[in-house]
Length: 193
Image 1 (tube, one colour):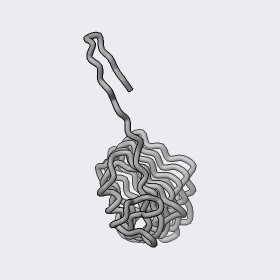
Image 2 (image 1 turned 180 degrees about the vertical axis):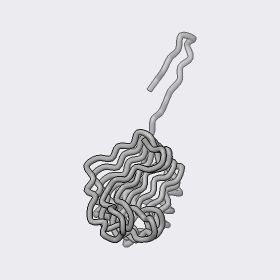
Image 3 (image 1 turned 45 degrees about the vertical axis):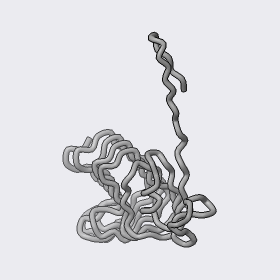
Image 4 (image 1 turned 90 degrees about the vertical axis):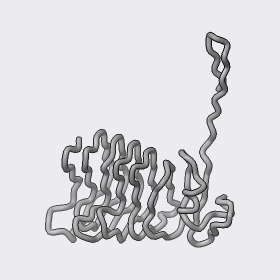
């Protein structure tokens, strides 16, 4: 894009396409280049070389994932995450196409103080512990859509904190039989709107 002003100053703005970075816990190696044919092994390695807006394609099985950059995290064939996915104070994140299970704290997927975040097309189940929900959104301008959320200890999807403009649509929230409260629901708490 070339921009000119009335003063004759010309500036060139370059927009780079996001990088596609591949990660595979089964065939990857962190000394690889992160391409589809030579993927990294760990998400932490992929995040360390990523920049804002990059797309991380992930396959395999992982422990807890902590998102540290504004990226799109896209699962290939529903990679299994045991321990949860966490995003804290990182904006413009997408989490899509994962199976998330086994979290014992807060939620299977926790979006905390993040803006413009999308959680879509995930299977979130069997996250068990005191007050552990399937998905917890404490964010502004966030979206949770097309997720299958079931058999978590507390509630299916919880919107909390001072969240504003949160869209929750087309999710299947069911069979939360482990709690003593009626928890097959979407729960809005605190001063959320």
